[in-house]
Image (tube, rainbow, N blue to C red; front, side, top):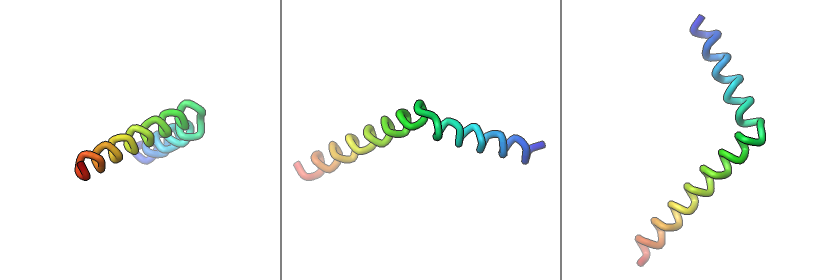
Length: 46
């Protein structure tokens, strides 16, 4: 039963990643992380 749940979770995660919404979400998170890293680097250098 638990194995079935993990398979379902994995397939739903893949569906989210494969969908347009998932791509936009991942891109948004990636960009936010990059902005944070750049701000942190500027703060350290300044």
